[in-house]
Image 1: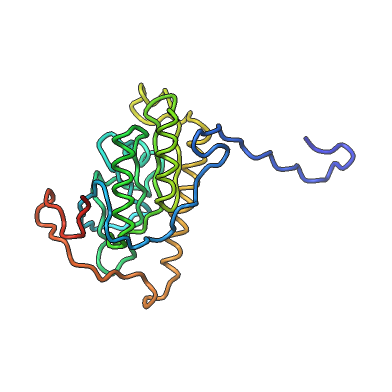
Image 2: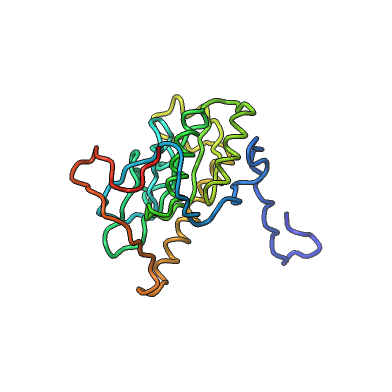
Amino acid sequence: MPNPLLPNAPTPPPPPEVVEDSPVLHAEVEARFGPQTPLYISDPQGPDLPFWQVDTDPALWVVGVHGGSGATTVAALLGSGALELYRYLPVAPEGTSPARVLLTARTHAVGLHYAAGVAAQWATGTTGIELLGIAVVDDAPRLPPVMVREITRLAGMVPALWHLPWCEQWRTAVAPPTDMPRRTRKSITRILAAAHHARSQHAQAQPSQSATYETPAPDYSDPSRRATWPAVS
């Protein structure tokens, strides 16, 4: 409302939108206390993902670490700049910047197990991707304490973690509804901002400063064949 004593004063900005409290992140929209670059671990544990040579360079690849991870929904929410790659890590075209990747997983035990395995795979420093983080998507209206602990542990393994709360409308809608939790809206905004920042950073870099990875070339002739990268037990 304008100040009646100062009719020409600018209208104050609206107060910041408050997101729903998260049992994992509380009032924060994202967690950023994990490593921002790979730690080059030598003995990763857990399941890993094979690789796929891609021929395009979108703003962001959305990679589900297991079936039913929510990758399709998250990619749709992110818009046309995001492409889904089902259970494969993208290998960027030669001469381009590393593929920017958002992992997705559900908040049940299997989903978090696979997420931790792929996070450990990234930590080896041999994947060649630029991992923005992981979006964990609630699989039920309430998170039990054991899952909260596992998600917190996962947040310490990746550059960023976003928690997308349960959305009952997604169970009945063919396409993701526009009416969604505020936390989800804010998370999508933060993810898009992170992807834009990563892409602009590479665009501004000199060719000699572009990230390159001296890694063995995987065999892509058979999509079902696991590439010859360090295996995860």
